[in-house]
Length: 99
Image (cartoon, rainbow, N blue to C red; front, side, top):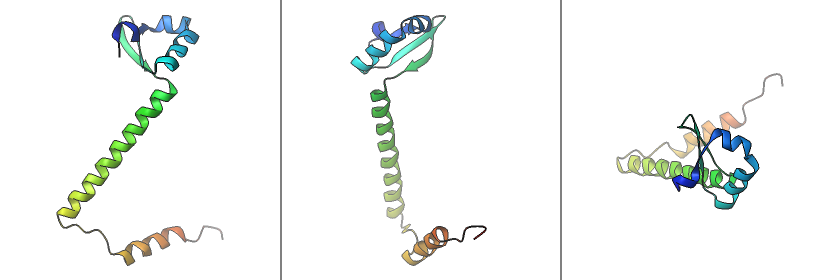
């Protein structure tokens, strides 16, 4: 983020929305919107948001895998396969009310 270019007032963004959204798409950098000189919001292009969301999801999955590996190292081997499948069958094939 280049602060001189990426921080704009909320009023300026509202007055020149098309210009600013075109720049968001072109440069793929977030804009910090200010109100009375204080940062109040961040605006992202769809591409930048998608990239950030994918990175967050990948990080979450990495943390889940790390926790599972640590649990395995501690001796927590999870549940027996038969018990896991039995629970899945009970949830998936549960009779629906009214039928």
